[in-house]
Image 1 (cartoon, rainbow, N blue to C red):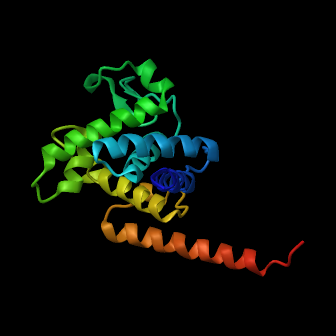
Image 2 (cartoon, rainbow, N blue to C red):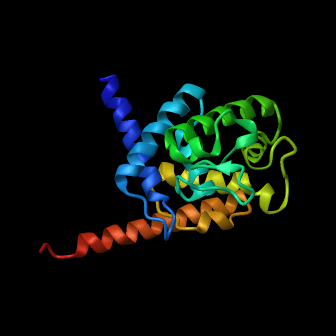
Length: 197
């Protein structure tokens, strides 16, 4: 019974990853399942929401496994900074499993560092993007909102395209998700209205 529950959870995370895939960077369902399994495994071990890990990967690399940042030090699916890991860029770019492991480790550390802060979510997520002296304003300051938008869309299993990249406030996340839900409902209605072939 526990195995079935865990497998259904992995499938739910995979469907979330598949739903938030980047326009122009198609994600096969097979890859989404692998990402769902890795995010669930490492998220569970570290006490981090797997949907958040998937959202970080989407926001950081659009699910392109061999991504490398402009300065060559942010590597792999979750753009782990080589200055804060024991793994090489080559290793991070070759292994989605390792990428999710390192993202979960970092997020666990940032959660501990931000515990008790009034801006807990902004603190821990913006740490991931801009380090200890995390940004609170501007495009880097809104990093946490983009990740939360992708995470909520993945949880709901709705397609948001690139809309999460533009959010600057919590209200905008709500609007993006409502619009995605309406579009999904319209699509389902159109499909239901089609005569069977």
